[in-house]
Image (tube, rainbow, N blue to C red; front, side, top):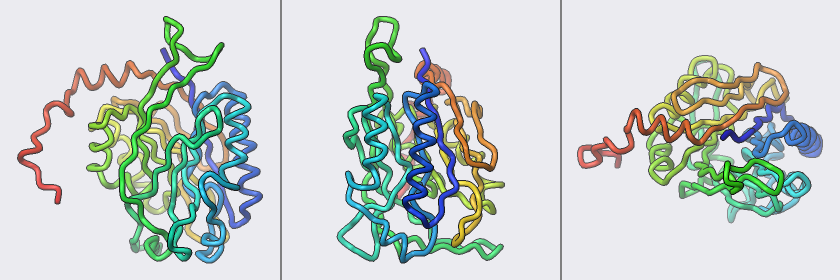
Length: 288
């Protein structure tokens, strides 16, 4: 039993309205192509100056989520808004929030990025996300029931179920987060990203495959591509990795849609063959 999904790859600018229109159009195409879960990248609504990023922040639910909520309701699909700027108690630093919308358009889960990208790469790429974002404070795992009358169901007619663990971009460098999600039952790990071209060409695929292999889970990673007017070039290469670490779908470096199928049975099989979650020795680890 497989569940059809799609990843939307974007090339966002500072024009929020144009970005939302482009993202909504591609999301419509993805669900029209059969996807029951559509995932979009980090910063889907805006890439640019800190001042305009702050100005783009909205409440959740709100103006940024509503176009996609309408699509979810119309097509009875799940939609993961990889990340948008969500208003926080600090007007200077909104949350970088991943929002999962249910088939009725309601907000099913909100994950706020835990690890903020404060780094300087030797090619001059520099980011200080902590200056413009408020970090989240908890991991998020959510149950997704996929299926409505006439859609994807199991052999006995029941809806298909997945357990999603949410994350965003730079989080992928912190394996302890993904182990936490897997121990809480996550079968699919979401990694929407705006990964730099400089780091992406060396690190993107190895990190995604590692997170899949060590947890026996699918990793779905929709990404930004292109060169924004302000900011660093993005790597693209949105990717789906199966629980054995095999890349089953990958985009190039342009705007578009990647379709794939997720089979929850492959998660169970991988964890049965390599029982890494059961063989842990937490008594010997120091993570503090």
